[in-house]
Length: 92
Image 1 (cartoon, rainbow, N blue to C red):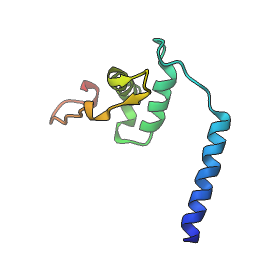
Image 2: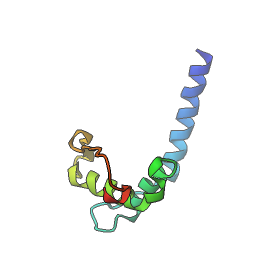
Image 3: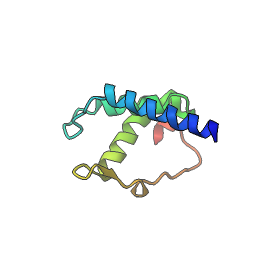
Image 4: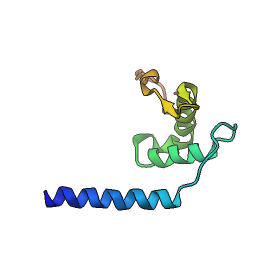
């Protein structure tokens, strides 16, 4: 229980810190550089790291196509990943 309580406290501290340094991003404009940077960070240690920029752009476009911007909601069930044998990562 003490360890779980410690994790809860650490989570509260981390959330407060993030709230204090957050910046609002206007994603409705066509410049999606911040979103691509976030996606590239998430892909940094993945197998696709050699094609980071390509997959970051693909991820941002996919999410924006199914996102309900007004409700600030994304139904990730509408995004499908299909694996096919052959070809290079860049063919995605």
